[in-house]
Length: 89
Image 1 (cartoon, one colour):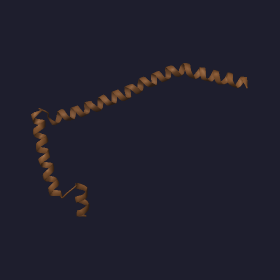
Image 2: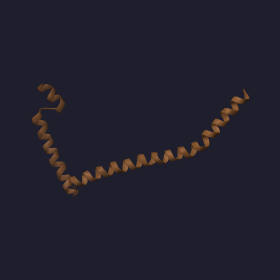
Image 3: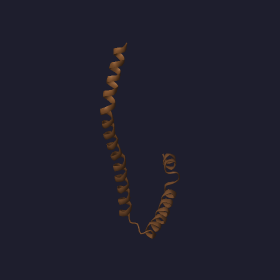
Image 4: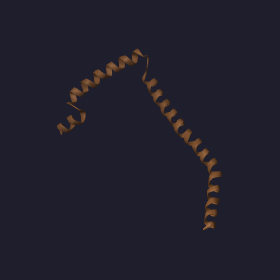
């Protein structure tokens, strides 16, 4: 079981904990230097997903509107052309 834990963590648990603590301190110093707080990062991530949601689904909404507008012309023309083609046979 110890081998599976080491393989999952990428090393011994104590070594991984030490690396994570040191990395967390370095990242914390950098974020402090940038005057970023955890709330700023969460707000940025939430804003990013909000922007993605509006961009993707806003575009889909416009695409559906364009589809319906075009289909109002294209589908009747297609049906009429198929009916005329059947009449020629």
